[in-house]
Length: 186
Ligand code: SF4
Ligand code: SF4
Image 1 (spheres, rainbow, N blue to C red):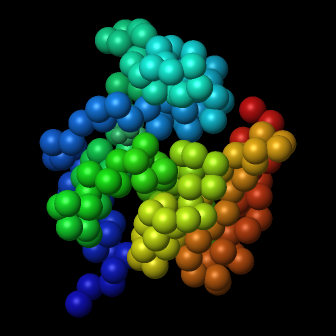
Image 2: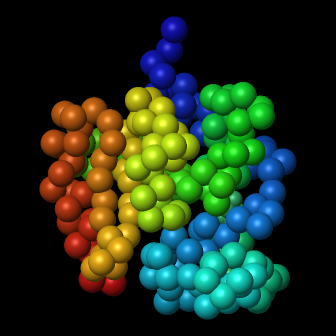
């Protein structure tokens, strides 16, 4: 039997862009991600979102199809079908980032420990503290460490934490702290 994290990495590698999923009404990445080209910081709703309600960051992209290349090229791990082999078909739809509250964004290499980690963002405040977000992060964290970003609701600062192997967390703590400081300075 292969190592679970290796099989997850293989699944990420091989299922990229083969998914037939659609973003639909999800705009989680237009909220959670920083987009350099637009001067948009993480957790600022993109000013180009034509929101369906005053308080939401979902609706439609007001500059589509002329949105930046960064947006055109981006697809989250759910859209890539990276988790399709891990969950029953009837669960997969509920894992769309706006529905489950967690946006799994990419696989990233940490230099300090020479490890690959999954990066994810809390779409709603506290969405990784309760289910289904918590179970999803825990399940994936058992396979590959998960770097979890959220916004502190009082200070509005970005916070990052690592879910998974405690040894890895210790060995990466300095690099993660630096990353968090840099993100908040931008
Ligand atoms: S978070 Fe994923 S599913 Fe949602 S809009 Fe972005 S790419 Fe599409
Ligand atoms: S430009 Fe459009 S696709 Fe890109 S972040 Fe803004 S709303 Fe989303």
